[in-house]
Amino acid sequence: SRKLIQKVSPNDFSNDNNPFGTFQEIEIGMGLARAHRVTYVGELGWELYVSTDQAAHVFEAITEAGTDAGMKLCGLHTLDSCRIEKAFRHFGHDITDEDNVLEAGLGFAVKTAKGDFIGRDAVLKKKESGLNRRLVQFRLKDTQPLLFHNEAILRDGKIVGPITSGNYGHHLGGAIGLGYVPCKGESEADVLSSSYEIEIAGERFAAEASLKPMYDPKSERVRM
Image (cartoon, rainbow, N blue to C red; front, side, top):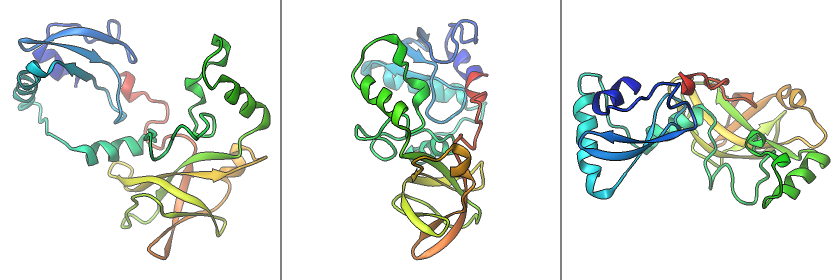
């Protein structure tokens, strides 16, 4: 993606000038855009914000430059497959305003020491009382079944909750799902030491469980 965007823009997209988590105003083709170095698919890339009157031109400039690079257009299901391998949460399925950020595994994004903010007291209270559940990533060991959402999660033979979102992970080689597992008074090791199955259409399938993204757990690819 870096080589491609440099074909259509004179700006500097190196890690030194445009590291992960930053943005810059750029020229692209004959247009202007705001390029955010972020990702929802777990790979090196940029999200481009373009005015509506220039969107068609910028799209054409990128697709023309991408022909030699083997670029292909992909839809939302491709995006969803990639994001679920990286265990990126989807607001509305995996997280809502009723879920606790710590139980969702997103505590790294909340800095309680920076001062007061909406929800700070709830985060501190949860830190003190402990987690009641954790969001876990699952991969079916059988490569054939598919996951969508609302399939039952079984822990040591007992149903403990539903899959909040699911899709097929083509890189990981199996259906991937996210879902909350009760864990009151338990450590991370306790959660992962259990045996898990996912029930699909009345049939149970063994699943691997992880509290870290199974794909690129250190997020090295997005910082290339």
